[in-house]
Length: 128
Length: 398
Image 1 (cartoon, rainbow over the protein chains, first blue to last red):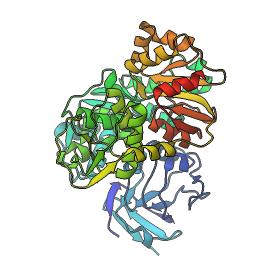
Image 2: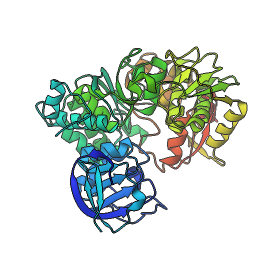
Image 3: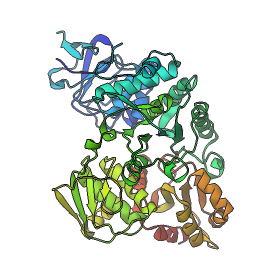
Image 4: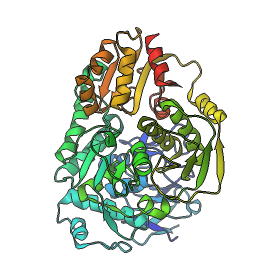
């Protein structure tokens, strides 16, 4: 699937997919990588080390710093794949150096699937 | 590394390659990456920056760590001012802020100061010396100030976040996209206001009504006969909080030229009443009164001081009048500070009720600010009531 580069890098890993937007500030524990937003589809799941697939970001601009905190704590997602990346997540990926791609039909990706994200060329490949 | 769509000057390339140090390299990485994402063709110089993300309550240790890293060798290249902190940097103790929080908040402000940021700590930089002119390109965060700069002043800025504003400060550049381009500043929906507006509360209510209706579509507003600077800053804060617009036009009041949209929406007394009903919680037990979101001007403080002079705030109620430090200094000189504090209210500099660590400290907030209602409910779990400044002070004294 061809998308648009948000931040460079190439990784392979397991997808964690949600159809709901994510607010990193207040919605994700910056120390553990667990989604803590009440009632969120991924509540209680850890995004750490996953190819995190979600439509778009929402909420406070401080969210960028939560991604940075996750990276420092070695709990960051391996890569981020969005339908449309909002500026808060884009800046978060840039300052934390997390590979990210958007303009992807995220509905085609399933949780647990092995996925390659080549952000430099904006390509997301399903490996299984 | 290639930056395909962006045409960089040699100076900009040097920054990206690290010739100006690692903070500048990181900052340029942010600016050019955003430029690529949003399809900018080039970077443009900015002459003024306003940074948000200052309260330790919002930043946390991670944010502070990022700032400290940038402060190792990062220096601002243009006039850069700062959003409110989580406390009055001098009088925090008497406002009930903990030692721990104060220590961490000071570390945040110190990191900004090491980078050469003027640590104003206010959401109204335009009132205290960071005042761009019409047509000037700037990089501001703080949604209310962004709205004010674009709409009331006619400067050009996108709605920056904390890290992207800091990146503009450290490089002196921003990517040319969005509201830096004239074609993206044109009005999209006309709002005819068919009611008289007066006071921060009513301008805030109409901001809520238009904001929720317009979303991200740029409003062209008619029917406002006059508005004070204070009323406009209240409107900016509200329309940006509830709608996400970063620019609007008011016929006869704001300076930008724009085509007039064909789509028309009507705003009546009913809309204001509905906005008020939405911001007034049932059974709000008011124990906190806060005025000064956005930060109060010296004119507003003078008026509040005269209402409080010789009176006494009722036992069990806390009153915060929030403002910028230079304005507080002026209020001290004019005797307003003593009139306010002797009545048992606080004139709080540098902070506001939205970013201070107040969660759980109060039950109900009365304020003249529609924006303050939003953060009091969401972040601090208070119930809210929106009233005029006069009614807020009356509540404090009853």
